[in-house]
Length: 157
Image (tube, rainbow, N blue to C red; front, side):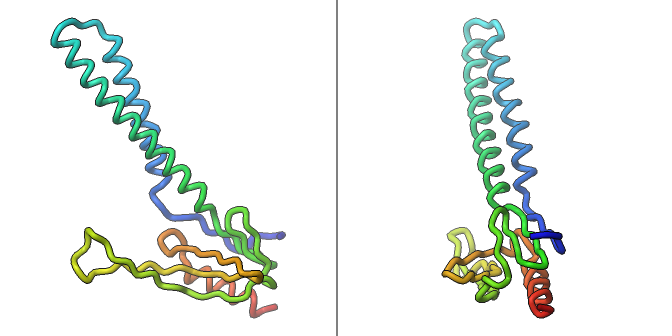
């Protein structure tokens, strides 16, 4: 594929949580290390040990948050539209291989919502020749604009 016509990056809080997790991990582990190295005896030693343990657990949860936020950010990738096709992260799809493009609604109920309430998320679904299906969520990308751009480009051809 040659020149990028349109480029979309995901709009999520994952990058914020990645950096927040890294900072909190350093603070948590640093606090635990400082408290365990601090000379103390009796109740002060016991108090330092308990607070160090809690700080270590904060650091561990922060590492998990940073890891999974970074993983999510990496898996979302970006959407690039070219004259010849579309690219999702590392996957390139020429327009000739696209069989069908449509928007699908996913309705799901949650235990935490009121009874009868559902959450609706729209997905841009691109079916490729050969049966491969790709979905883009409206939570991270402007799917209406992406669909319009793809249809404009494919009508010109």
